[in-house]
Image 1 (cartoon, rainbow, N blue to C red):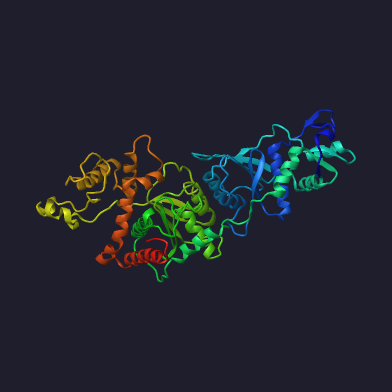
Image 2: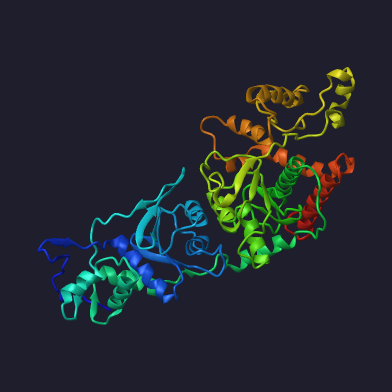
Length: 512
């Protein structure tokens, strides 16, 4: 094909007369043309699925499916090309939950795709991802200006009708590639953009710095043997405590080689409670590197795997977003994801919808965020002056921490009664909820105090002192709990593994 200037245009044929004498509308429009060009590019790639990123009707980047299950064309494109906000994607396959989650994370405007030869589209929004809709056929797009073939009007009609079968596609591609077809300026520009595109990605993690960081993270997993035999509920509580402790160890001021990101951490363990991976949010390196995503990608890369092993469990301090939930449900089967805190923005994620058998549940870990009161030196004298039955057993924070409990604003920092606000909050919240309050309830109560114009949950986790207080307590108390020898052998083994992980991350130079 060639491009012919406007001076050489042969009058275009937008419609043709059918056998009955009625005018028949040709279906090709700009959206269908992008899909047809994606199919043409797929043939050029040897049958590998393709995704075109389009901004203002210009192709600016291309994704090609890779060799692993987590390397779909859309995923490879959006992970590596971050200038996709407000853009449209045209792709040759039905997007997976992982692809849709990446589209949500990168704020693309729409994903137009082919289900067989049926064109559909979805729109990621703040509330999630819409149901799919059939792509309309309104409008038309002129592809050819001149066709130097016999019965050129029939060939023009073929070229400007979207192919709906493999045979029709083969004929369409052959005709489009023919040197006897002169393209319009619009069609030629799109063809040339695809041909000359500099940003073509056929793997998910292609940047050397990203590969290096994921390798360093997975290399910090300690050697472990044996199983941890204890009650499932105890496992959930202790592994969530380890996840909180990891968040405390990786607070912003504790990170060295580890890139900065939100205060979120995750742990992945096997069915025998062997730590398989860990992650924290390092979105300064790549906006897609949330805690769960960095953890899963590091594991897959280390093991040259496409899937997570059977029986894995994931513990995350914050409910996974659509991107992370999509990744987990795509590469994992029947994966329980235990979370410590819900994100109100994330509704109907792949985990909420139990895709591929995976499910999300909130942990019941209690919000104990400080030692027993009699162990705090500045309050020991006061505690000793009270009768034993009136001494509270636990309270959540040191006196110098501002607003340590929901409802404690306005109480002077040196007020000796402030530590007991936790007991009052626990009692009133338990009566309100009809169950024991969790750490997630405690964090949400603090978040609610930000008022009706409160910031998003990740901003809360970064700026509010309450999450840091919870994370630091769990970090500081891991060894103390182990030394107290209050648990059974299984609980002890989990604590030992969590402590060994954090120590190795420090030795690895990622945190202080």
